[in-house]
Length: 157
Image (cartoon, rainbow, N blue to C red; front, side, top):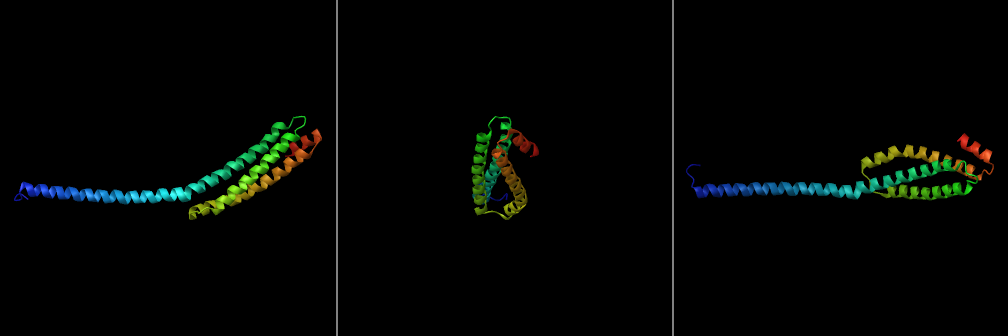
């Protein structure tokens, strides 16, 4: 190395620097490609699933909250119009819930998302049974014109 001229040493240094720059550039390009694929999968597969599941959950919560709202009108003189509004709102929310479930079923999912969905199914079935019972109870409360009998329906459920 001592026998090489300064010019040759500088040329070797520049060549090694260029080689290092190429290595860093290739590594950066490769990493950028991997990140791009991951972001693409996130946007095209995972995010629509999360949004659909979020819509399902939010709609279920709205349906549940609407049933709780009936308790607020328990002592009203003529609660039937308010209860009818709750029943109508629940029917619309049920349609939204069905639509959200259908949307989720149509989405492309990963194997992991399929496992999550399979785990949700028993909970969904239990919730649907609860909701069906709540629908029947709301109808009983709405249809009952006698205040004492209506209070009994509230108390029994």
